[in-house]
Length: 146
Image (cartoon, rainbow, N blue to C red; front, top):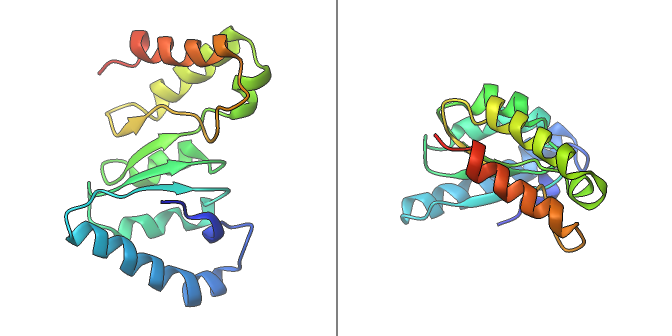
């Protein structure tokens, strides 16, 4: 499921609170009550709305983040919501293998500390360098073990 139009860049907080959040929250809670574990892609910037995710039951959903500050998200969601993502597609497209490994190690060290993190690209991997995608996978296997 993608939460495309809930981003900070698309609507004001007042619009979000009035029109978006009540319906979105009912949908996600309904899925959880039916036994699903929603994996929601929060496309764009969800920084000012991260605390809203604490309204969902603990341990019952996965938040895949795009351009949101994943380090801040870890501070807010630690022990509550599993976080996924934040390896920039641009890094996988034009970065070096070493750049990819360093970025992934930092994500594993900081966001992966104490669990609750899945390392993954922010978005599409259609046009990335094969060696960079392989480096992301390899560093996760080598370094990202709890």
